[in-house]
Length: 100
Image: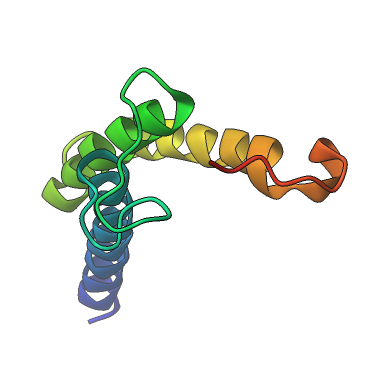
């Protein structure tokens, strides 16, 4: 019984996380779900936000599908650490927020 519950819990967490990454990738690349700042606004593909959107879109699809989940999760973790260090961490940016 506990093995089934653990497998179901892992699947729910994996699919939920994948959908969250997928949603943010679609928002950055295609301007859906509110876009970036303005409705329909997208990030240029040759920018950090564009690369992040591509990683999130592809990584989200792979997580939902359950393909190469550990390497994909590692790449997405690295992306989130870089995003935190460059945009969200006030200590690294001197109190300034570097968002578009």
